Image 1 (tube, one colour):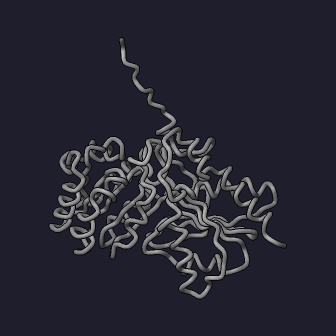
Image 2: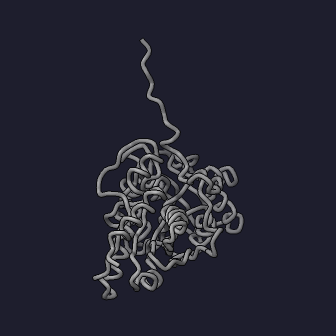
Image 3: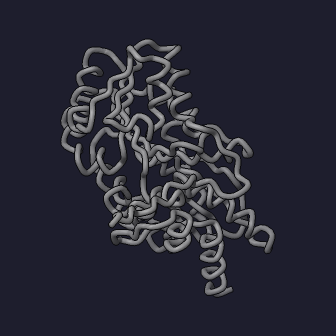
Length: 333
């Protein structure tokens, strides 16, 4: 009797790009190659996942500057710290769950405490895979936000990634980037936008409500805003590509008025962008203002087809637009 093999659904590893949105293949890999051509100190490391983090592009271009560490994330972190200690600029790639849950202590004490320029590039952040809790890093930002001296970057698209890589290489101290891999959406170059490490940016103005978003949810927020505009609802989008250090001044300048505020994040509602914005408001004396979080629930998520999961957990552009309409219809006046 022949055993039945489980079928592997392509939808579980589908691109996060919505229909009609342009994509760029492996923007991180190409950006790292370009940066390495200009700076011989840049090296790349992978923990047996070079192909799945787009680090293989760098490995092919610079085989003598690429180090395959095997399935040993803690060893990779320690090796990257050692390289930074002697003047190299490492970019170390793995999955988010392994970088945070498995190698936290090495990132903290080997990189952050001595302030070394090591750049962790972590694929599959939040709900960007359908392979269940073992691969879904829905709490990675919450785990890392309390680490002193660590920069956390949550890029929206290929534009963010391409512009972030050289800035991360030049910045002091360690960084953690929530990598979008493979066929990555390309949407921000349709707006007057450029990535600036440590800064939030108003990407789209709007008079009726405000989205404060990060990561792929800025893309979904922009798409939802376009759909809402067709119904006469004008939504502003403030993109927080850097989650730490957090640009309180820019964000609070756009949420200080009477417009309803929504935070959009591909992360648990616990410990991420929603709580960061709420804490910033409280520090500035605006704690009475309501913020509506659009985020992943505080639970282990299901496995399944990625588009279905995004719709189920409220991350799709249609679900974001629905949530805004519901909130605005329930608001007096």
